[in-house]
Length: 120
Image 1 (cartoon, rainbow, N blue to C red):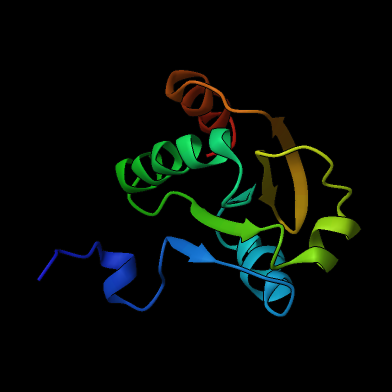
Image 2 (cartoon, rainbow, N blue to C red):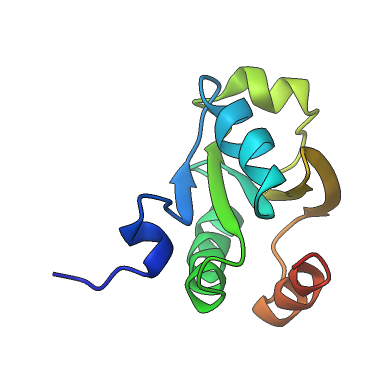
């Protein structure tokens, strides 16, 4: 059985799949407790598929310092439209219910880590 970090053991997962029905609770409300990085992606998007594992590694390395919320734009059209997502991959960093940074396009791990650390 794989080991789980303390937050996951307490029922607070650090990597979530989020859609139209739970975006407010999983992202906006949760960001009042811990920063939430929202990854807008789609399965047909090659840069998105390359970025996903990098974000997951960062989430595991930061061990609960932030939550990674993955939003498949094909399955969550209302959220994607409401936020004006036009290009993917797109990352939004939320703190206290507000977007504090937007990153569009695949970025190297070092760039993502540096931009993320400014909000942790």
